Image (cartoon, rainbow, N blue to C red; front, side, top):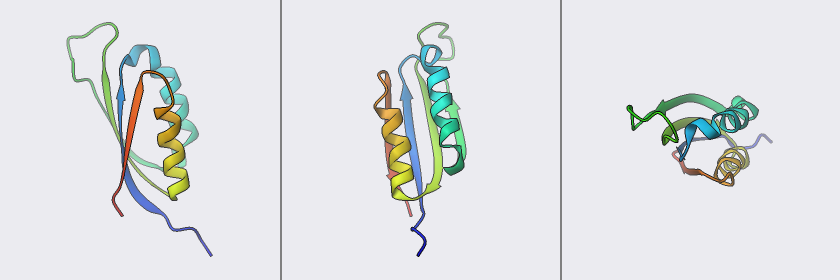
Length: 87
């Protein structure tokens, strides 16, 4: 029996996107098989150093896969990730 897949959003706040870009990209690449869409927003367009970044992911996977991605991001210092399972 196949595990049920869910559709979810993961909203990510990166407190210093320049410092964390490589780590965030590595995590997203490792979980790329469940990521359907990704949007990155620079809320402080005039910021040059230590800027906050916001990302939104749309993912499809098992609850375990979705929670693993969210937890890996959220456990990283300077990153907050919140998940909402929609379907």
